[in-house]
Length: 313
Image (cartoon, rainbow, N blue to C red; front, side, top):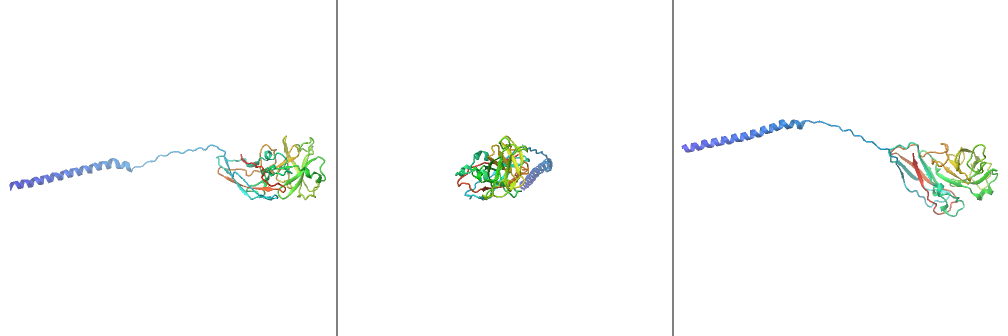
């Protein structure tokens, strides 16, 4: 009896001790978590910000993209035009082109000798047929067209100027207009001052073969400027209105230009020489319509390739 009682009491004591140990262990865990919460949770709950200034500087770069890289017209019947093609000019740089966008063709180099009467199409520069129209214009204009003396028509021209030295036609496509160049006092074609007799006369009506009187239906020319190689003329009416006409000093050819501000040509009034566009901002595009006008009398075959250069300043 005594032994059983002792065992019972010991079991009670052991259970009580286990409970106290479990309680102590749980209390330790609870206190530890409490300390952790006190020490760390306030820091986790707090927030702060910091700022960084971003600074970017763009360098000044002039860059121009011109597409397409090739313009091609095939099987054009003389006396007709081709199909319109669009030239897209994009300012891909970082600077504003504020002094104008212009076009030029290397006709001087590609058509250095008179092609009239040739049986080969390669005698003609393809760029001489190129016409352009900007988005604000309704009329096409040749870029750099060369017109040459045609000695085969000299005898058919009547009432020539006494100082006349060459005669030919301005061929715009299906029509042609008779012109006459008179020399200056030095027998050249560079001086258009009032004391000289040099002029570029052109008829205002299309040629029919029987209306070649150089005293009837003549447009008045105005001298503009000159270099040692060229003199420049403009017209207020007639088929050369809105063009600059640069006459070679040998009086045998002249260059028509509208969109060309190339410094090798003499200065020309702004009323006759235009930019394709006055300005072009970064990422901006300029659309220009291109075509070709093929005059009658051009032999079949491939003309000599030319290069169109678009310049923005």
